[in-house]
Length: 299
Image (tube, rainbow, N blue to C red; front, side):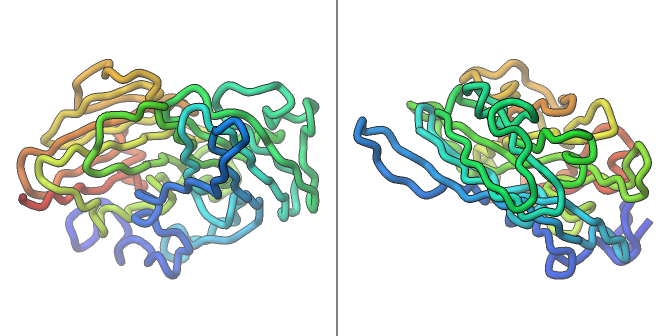
């Protein structure tokens, strides 16, 4: 136990400038790409995604040799509107072959699967993935190179948000939370767990929200080596939209579970100010880093 009275590291989470990961910045960092208008009037969005090897200090004195998209864990959260044309220019600057596999609807040649289309992208090579943004919802992308588990677990994943063509009811605050883990000893399990890449970060730097504001969270589970993850919030309930592909919620609850690759939208209003914990409802995950606070400021 640390001096703050919660499970964690004795000196607190690793400072973001030392860690090389800033989970708070990632929360609201939606990358809408470079936009132009096509002759048919549709919006074209383009991104450059570079795979590169990089070390991070994820816990005090613990470095993790990661494989990343654009030098961060998770990779950039790509945002598009339903029906947009998308081009993702992928450059492999890593020492290993990689791909980008997008969850969504597209042609087989754009699937980022070895042996189909461009297949594996070798070190020093590049490829442009092209497809339309469909269906709307909360999605993800990740490497699909074999062996698959380490290619994902070492950091090659990110959020992929497709806004409905007509939009959703406006939220006062919108963010993304990517649930992940770190296998630091080369075994078949994880030693650390986190949201947006840095264990215990949100214990020391709570997520700042406003009383009664509609908070929309795109919750994505990319945890490897464990079959299931979960999200629980204290003192409050939320509406949950599985995969974000519907405009009506499936339930009103305070806890949901997701298997790997599963995702959804959490919409919550906090009626009372104060600090409210959120965490995996699996004690092991919470005590190894997957826990934090919402800090609700009064109106």
